[in-house]
Length: 288
Image (cartoon, rainbow, N blue to C red; front, top):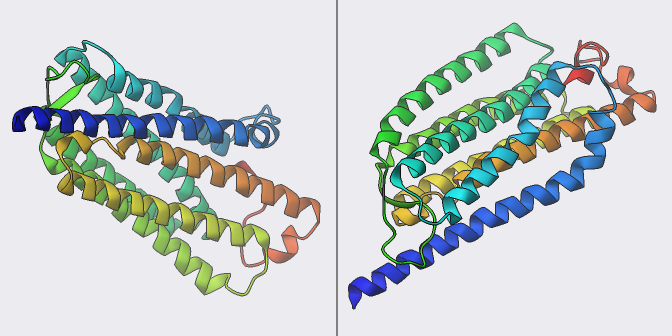
């Protein structure tokens, strides 16, 4: 009786995870159409390509690959172990790419706030390289440890994970450290140089950047807690949320900054209020 009850508890846990996967799909679809008008106006109205546009497009649309694969692994019937392992590898790589692209977008904001300071570039590049090496090592340790099996009940659909070490928690710690570095650079620059400046562009660069980092930091903490405090059935509860939310917030921040930049430029106050920042709208800021 206890064994049967445990099986039904596992089914309930997996159903909860499935609800979360569906909810992030709905959230992304809502955000996509909500931001579509701004995207068409601020991104696709210009036919030329810039660094910002080249970053925006894959960041914006990679969830269209991540979400269907995630839903497939959650709801597919009669999936074999090889298919589940292949899907897991694809998702890990895509999640890493999505988060990396989002972090690069935010790093450009920090770079802009620091007037393209070379020391800041070195700090950001070193952080990125160390993070990338650490993530590769973590994934190489984690992926071979994950095992799948046949679902014990017919009502359980999708890939049924039966084991895996908890070293994956370190990947979220790496993300937290990287975001802590960029947040510290943003706060130091904002408080040290732009605290008394009323310019809306600078305020949005600071506020959006800090909100982005704090949100992703909290989500990384939540993922670590899920890994250590909840059963293995919950291990994927927030992983897709984190990667998709990275892309949503990063592209929202990019669109918001372009909108404020365009408005500030049109009212003629940009050059007066950005005297503490040496770059020009036409050469760098407008391209990110």
